[in-house]
Length: 146
Image (cartoon, rainbow, N blue to C red; front, top):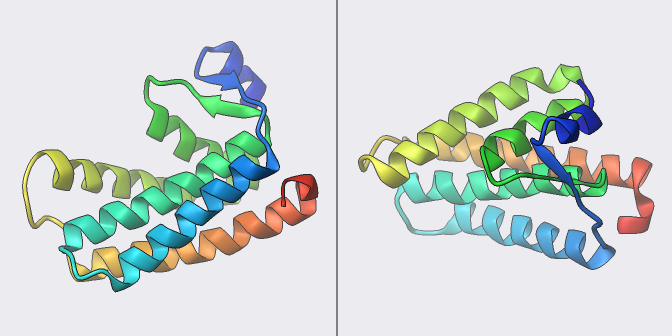
């Protein structure tokens, strides 16, 4: 299914981005990665911060392609779009980020202490790698946004 088909289904809306908007999102990613790696906060929060950075990278991809996720299932759709944009080989990355989304929701809304230090570190490292892939993709596909 294409992103346009997602939009036709009402899952995405058109979005005209700018170089400044992409730069702002990438600055959020940098801040969040730094904070998730260095902050003296709980593992729950570290995972939440790293998750936010990963979500922003997926948002960059969607915005660059001219779309944004609708409010209903916003995070889910934004993450799912990763494989539509970067390729089907990203299915395992989507599965992993969706699992992190669920873990973050539990840590934020249900109970404390469900996230291990390893969980947080793993997501930070994953997101750092994803950042490089997104920057490479932007360089190849949307240089006007860099």
